[in-house]
Amino acid sequence: MKIGIFDSGLGGLWTMKSIVKELPDYDYVYLGDTKRLPYGNRSHETVYEFLCEGLTYLLKEKDCKIVVVACNTASAEAVSRARREFLPKKFPDRYVFGMILPTAEEAVQFRRVGIIATRGTISSNVYPKVIKKLNPKTKVFQLATPLLVPLIENDGSTFITEAVRDYLKPFATKKIDALVLGCTHYPIIKRTIRKFLPKNVAIISQDEFIPDRILLWLADHPSVETGLSKNKKREFLVTDITPHFKKLAKVWFGKNLKLTKVSLG
Ligand code: DGL
Image (cartoon, rainbow, N blue to C red; front, side, top):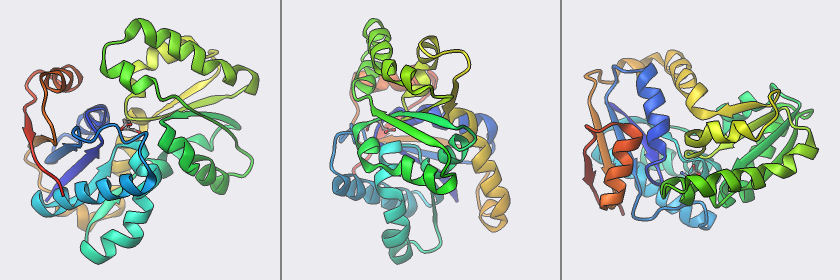
């Protein structure tokens, strides 16, 4: 059986790249819902529906034992509900690994934490809730930064610098000591973000700790780990292909990547 990686689009390729680097032997299937991207501005109900369709495809058609939901918006709004309602009914022997808890566990090592993410992730309020539960002393300041994803996807580098500068301004007075990059795309502009943060502010970036967390999870679930196939196969599925998506995917993951179009729902 394989490891699935789900995202609303192609940003999750960055998360996948870091996972594959640390855990190269397993077989992976990436599924990006490019047809319905972005998820960040959609309702919670719709994101839940889309996530369940993506999970069904990966668990049923692609025989994945575990799906890593790289998309923060889907992790924030829909992963716990899918674990409560969808998995027990439809796929009781499969697992879904979301971004929120591992990221919150990194965040609670700090006292004053800023979070940037899509509107959907921020309005779900799930990061502050989970962080407060883990450590009531950690203060959380969150901000929706909806312009970043479209700029990153459209080579808007000159505008990105200005957008990042502007978005990060309010955090200066909050005296944060760490900033969570709560979106698949933000590690791509980590260097720009670094430029506008004081040196003592740590950046919490999922590409840097999610692979370790998956490694630990697999070590804690030996029966799952032994059932995973290890032929170094990678498959890249999307729900829509355009020349721009093709180009972006190659730039973000490597020139040998081949996208295959599939239908969900
Ligand atoms: N993948 C989404 C996330 O991490 C960003 C793109 C979108 O809005 O769908 O929140």
